Length: 254
Ligand SMILES: [Zn+2]
Picture 1 (cartoon, rainbow, N blue to C red):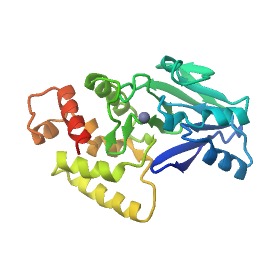
Picture 2 (cartoon, rainbow, N blue to C red; picture 1 turned 45 degrees about the vertical axis):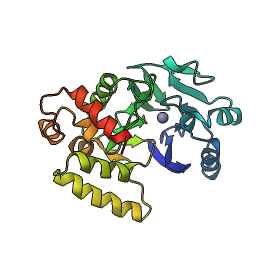
Picture 3 (spheres, rainbow, N blue to C red; picture 1 turned 30 degrees about the vertical axis):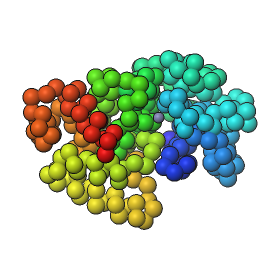
């Protein structure tokens, strides 16, 4: 599968997915139709499928216009969001298999940012499209879920193979790195990675995708059950859920 990253608004990423065997083309979370239509035109493709991770407008904003232009294009979205995402053709839930030509993905429910949030895991392609559930060095704000729910979602992602590429929906990495350094002040890998992404951003290079192995080592939100992190924030005896709630609250006020 070929994956192409498009930018939208200030810091959104839209992903074009192309099955190399069949030419079938999909898009993940079209913020708006325009960048997608331009890419399709420039590359002489039509759109077969829209994958939505959750109901927020900056993830589904392009659905309507894209489906109007390509009436056979299917909207794949969480089954629990039928009322908030219009015109879903294929409602999906945890463990459901979806395909784009010969490319297959498994749906993973990752509630917390919103109640009906899903991620699409293309195992053979080592690619996870996780919307606003997990960001590089951060995670989504908890708009609708509970800390326990969100922590469980992040653990599901953490259990995927280490080489999984994390295609999240926003370029927040540099801000997230600044926050992460306030939590684990002595994590040497975090410092190095921060320098690396600062350089990338100064050259206008995207820091996404990230790799799960790196996130597991330096993303504080994936490390709430690590004794060293608990110690670092003065909560050595707290549960992972309590630690998650604490650092999520700190990030909200950062
Ligand atoms: Zn969102």
